[in-house]
Image (cartoon, rainbow, N blue to C red; front, side, top):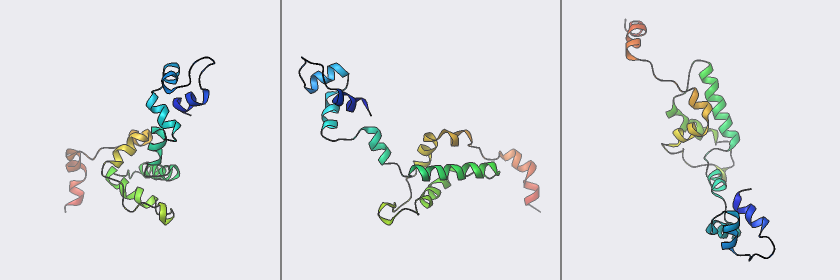
Amino acid sequence: MDRASQALAKGMPEGMPRSYRSLEDYHGVSSSTLQRRNAGGRSKEDKAESQLYLWPSEAKAVIDFALQMADLGQPLRMKHMRSLAFRATRHRPQESRPSKPPGKNWPKAFEQRYPDLKARREKGLDWNRHRNNIHGKVTH
């Protein structure tokens, strides 16, 4: 429960007027936040959670798959995470299924939300190493 909901639930001590201004002074929560919460508004955290593209179980499946592929020596590129997330939502009922893949900045935000992926991020092969180790094997 967030601070605004707690302030509304606790109320004011005896002898103090019950107004948003006095609640603001006593609990240290903005009066506009108290009014919005009293009218049934959601907290920013609740609203942000409802706007996530993947459900928690789908996000866990995508993370597990990405880490498993990295352990097998084939790390996923971040540009493929969008299509992987879109495929992870295909099991949902038709009404709650997204009609298009997440936006172009979604993989970066997903990586910031889950630090396990950030630690496993790898860079591409350096061109000097490519010429020395792979170039001769590819060209005949």
